Image 1: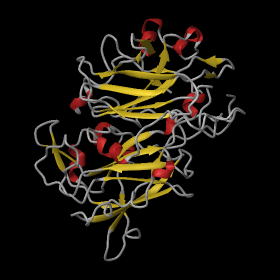
Image 2: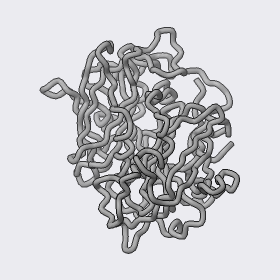
Image 3: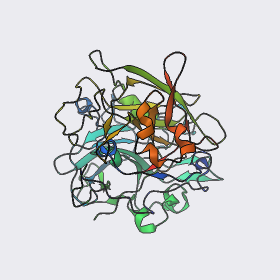
Image 4: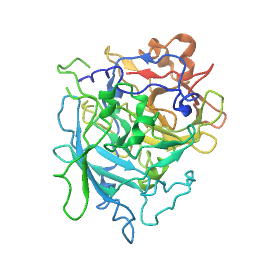
Length: 230
Length: 186
């Protein structure tokens, strides 16, 4: 059994009082360190046959096109050694162009778009690549503190090869001035590490007369170099 | 080595994603093993139910076999069983899984681990998922389980689902406070 390397400290954010909802939802006791066993090395897969043909195109899931700026988001899912991970399930959910989610809990005074659900899913190809066509998500206010606004982002859910490669995160856009003010983004303290969550504008991914392209690679935990006994 | 992408909170709106998935159904008619129901609530540090948590489970089949290419023991996994469960908590923080009792699985030392289910908890206010395990109160092997043995004795019961009068297993996930659930760093 090839074990997974431990995650370097400072990669995944801890509790953060600046993000108020963490205060009552994070354990006070330290995590108990345990070895990886067959339970953690294996992991779930989603029934793959249900990924439909327009599941990765959020602009073609309704009768008409959604309002907003069409974008392409493409990248690769890699293991911690830089190798591609094929067959990873990548799912996204996001606000519409006006900054409103198609969810009953979202009461932001911005219009819903009947042609935009804001969810997508796809499987990575042989080179670990995924691709979505969607709408540039809008900024929106939230109740964390006075005049709080989230930087534009797309939520990503990734199911990699094992239980330990499960990742839920958010992709941000380059040059967004709200990033500097956002406690969720800044819960990752190291600026270099934080920057891994920001996509790049890519003129080569941009399709003339049609859509801007943003590139974003996702790196999951990698394996140890040498096998160890199960 | 490439730098790992950091985790971020799932926020309150992941429900729109789950609605687009096929229904989570782990057990089908032909599934081997003892059918069980596990239910409980996810609670915050003030004792209130967390109504926007995403709970995911991962478990072996009734024979202790994982449906995964890296479980390469000769016995094949039950093709009618899906070891992956997921649920959005209800308004009161409650959740419910209908599944089967997993069999024992190998331990790193060559023995067995007592039957257990892995659990991930994600939510608004949780920046990085928390991982715990569900064990069962009617398994004598819990006493010799190598992972349970690493948990301070006074906190072990937080990992154990208890049988209720209606035959279900009750398992609350307490994020914070005096009865805080044990979470793992793996």
